[in-house]
Each structure stands twice: as C-alpha cells, then as structure tokens.
Amino acid sequence: GVAVIASLIYLAIQVRDSAREQRALSLREATREFGTLIRTVGENDEKACLWLDGVHEFESMSPSQRFRFNVAATYLFRHFEQIYYQNRQGRVDGEFWDGFQNQIHDIAGYRGVQAWWVTRCHWFGDSFRSFVELHMSPENRPSIYGEEQSAQAG
Image: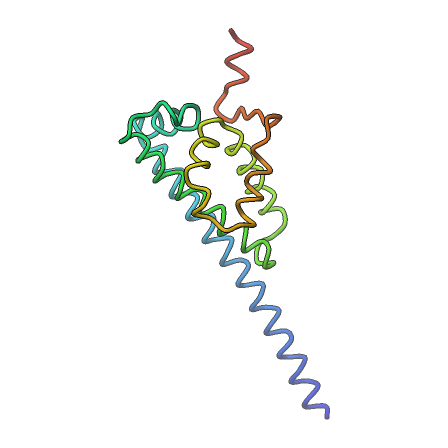
C-alpha cells in the first residue's frame, strides 16, 4: 500500500513538472516567434514603412503593398491566435497573457488593421475572431506608433 501511495505521489510530481515545463516551452516559443516577426518588420525602413502604412491606411495601399502587409498581419494574428488558444488551455502564464492581450488591443485599434481584418477574419477560429473584435471598438484609439505625441506637438 505504501509503495502504491509513493508511486502515485511520484507520478503526480512528474505530471506537475511536465505541465510546468510545457508552459515554459510555450512561453519560449511564443517569445521567439514574436521576436522573429518584430525583427523582420523592423529590420529595414521599407518594411517598417509598409507596416506603418498598412496599420493606418490599408485600403489605400497598392495591391502589392496589400499583399505584403497581409503576409505580416496574418503571421502576427496567427501568432496571437496560437497564444490565445494556449492561454485558454492553461498553458500560458497569466502575466504573459496580459502582455499579449495588451498588444492585441493596441494593434487591433488601428483603422488599417480593422480594414485588413474584415478581409481575412474568416481565416481564424470563431472564438478568437470574437476576442479580437472586442478590441476593435471606436473607443480604442491606439498610439503605439507615437500618434498622440505627434498630435500634441502639432
């Protein structure tokens, strides 16, 4: 009987440690993927300008610019979707999720991102779509690229 109890305790510890390691792995992978995207967009002026043009004025972009913006935005929102579902499964630390949720909120508030989303939202799962659309309210006025500072300076 004692051996069975000891085995169960050992098994419980192993399961807990495995779950902790899985969460840590998810965190590392999410951070790595997001870093790759940010590095890709920010590595030169052309890509940075394309991103900034897209978040502000997706509809006025040329077809080739729209295509390139779509690639970056799809990659970003696929990444967000992955983290969203991992969070729902309890695989992501709450504080880490809060940071991603804030990023989604900031990016989803841009008019260009909203225009892009209308063209591609059907590519994503229903619950993630609903989650993102909560962050697309008219009250959400993002300023992650310095818009408010520019308006105040002018």
